[in-house]
Image (cartoon, rainbow, N blue to C red):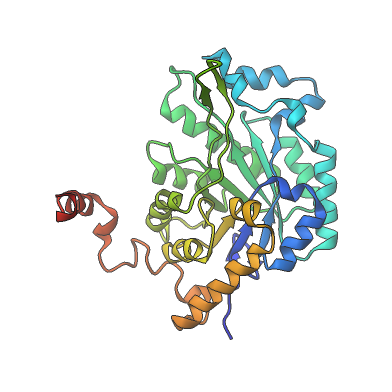
Amino acid sequence: MIDITTRYMDLELRSPLVVSANPLSQKVANIVAMEDAGAGAVVLFSLFEEQIRQEAAMVDEVYRATTNAFAEASDFFPSLEDYAVGPGQYLEIIRQAKEQTSIPIIASLNGVTPEGWIEYAKDIEQAGADALEINVYFIPADIRLRPDEVEQRYVDIVTMVRETISIPIAVKLNPYFSAIGNTALRLQEAGADALVLFNRFYQPDFDIEELKAVPNLDLSEPSEIRLPLLWIAVLYGRIPVSLAATTGVHGAREMIKYLLAGADVAMVASAILKNGIPWIGAILDDLETYMDAMNFISVGAFKGSMSQRHISDPTAYERSNYIQIVDSKAWR
């Protein structure tokens, strides 16, 4: 009997497929369908700090904290009217999801300031969420801001949230830190139980006829797994936290690669937005077929076997391998 269960943070999951934050989880019926399809856990759609601050009439402070260099940058954020669900409704979705499903429900807070959501994290825990994913949407547009100040912002948020709640905390990282490994270590020391690699920031596009910046969001592609695959393979076994992959998983092939690198779970959003919630079952069926063909009786039997720590040639992740590729005959 093939065992596809896994452990993410201190949560026991029946499968390594976790649905990442996306609009489908605004309806509890969809969360139930995700469980029925085989999802190991669901990360709810993100609750934005702006929503919390709107209730306190302090939205201007949020924009001031992120756009003090370029006033136009506020156009890159969704308008408050675009948020379909407010804080009170968010807590009710957590409660109903916990009542109607048996899989872990992970809340997601998306903020830009260290103090913006601390009190609300308590409410999320009290509503019954099994864990909290911290999603820091911060664009360091101020050119005077030093790299260490950016990294410290993340550490401060984790420290403050860890002091506020007792449920596990995952941190959704972006790939732009100057020293990802050290930042990951500092976040673990601050209290993070898991690292999610990597966040896909919404990036503006240009309308060349109207001459204005416009918000644009594309679904992920399987080719995007390369960068998180690298860092999961490098971090595995070096930092005592769970690792989650959240980019480019459209089928079992991408999930398997992430598990081989050392991820505890692979998160899916774009694939089910494109193919529907039942696609979860198709991915897991293909995972079991692969495991059966490879004689892997459990996820643990092969998780991390292709990480830098366990691969026969660790230099495959380093500069020397890059030099070999550049100097190969394939370029001639």
